[in-house]
Image 1 (cartoon, rainbow, N blue to C red):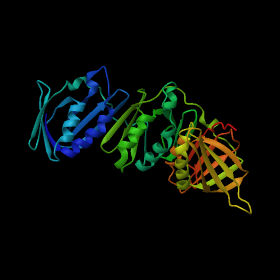
Image 2 (cartoon, rainbow, N blue to C red; image 1 turned 60 degrees about the horizontal axis):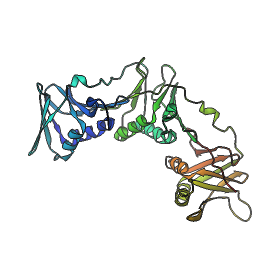
Image 3 (cartoon, one colour; image 1 turned 90 degrees about the vertical axis):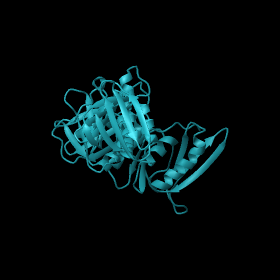
Image 4 (cartoon, one colour; image 1 turned 90 degrees about the horizontal axis):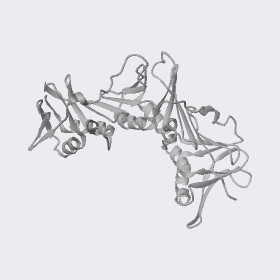
Length: 377
């Protein structure tokens, strides 16, 4: 293999694939990054057997070849080089990669590329696509509700249902639920339902930060995997086996009070109240006060920490229905309000012990259900 490329292109590619390199592994080959020629481009690949990433960068290829190089060594060395052209030359007999950039040179002892796990390529069947900016929003709004506790693996994933011209994404951790629907570029050939690890989707969102072309989702037949195809990156993830809970039963079908507030003002009020709430199990109390002749409608937020003190905040609101006092986990409120871009948000409530539903005003494609916390009188 004899190939050259720009240092910044190689550094960017390595930063993408290195996130799939496991921090620890009993298999030494998983601690490497595959460096291989692929036509007129250089291919970089890494995997931890749950997530695999292929990335292609522009390069000048004189001789074809491949080698697996220790990830940390390669990433650290390339990142330390000046922004000039890097020349790479592989000694096939010893699997030694020689790198030269400006006044710096290095030899890296690699491993046999045939030992590197194969990361599959996309197939034509079971393929749908979605605008990149829409998919990034979907991931941002849904994965916040996925569980981090591995005791129930299905809850660490996002349930995806593809039917007709739209996809529905849902995640729940037992305390909250996020559901988002989004349009597909073209209608799906057949309905599909699967569970994608939330960590894989978060990784996809990071990779797709600068993506402008639609992102393709492909489910290879009989492999229990999903493949996301971007313009210069493929991400492959194992799917989670199991049955996702029927989340539709969790969503309240009616409410007695609907409170509309400015999203930014409410987020700031919750963050301020959280300074005290974080010292008291993250409990923030919301007192919803309907308007009357003497005072306009508003919502009062307060938190009390026995060792620290207490605080009170207030935001203007439009209240339909009766007044109510209900408590939520302040961290959960901050999470959901931070991913809503609409100017106003509606909180639908029934009783102090019933779930609250948060919806952006003017958008019907996202909802977030959050369980209330017990208030000690």
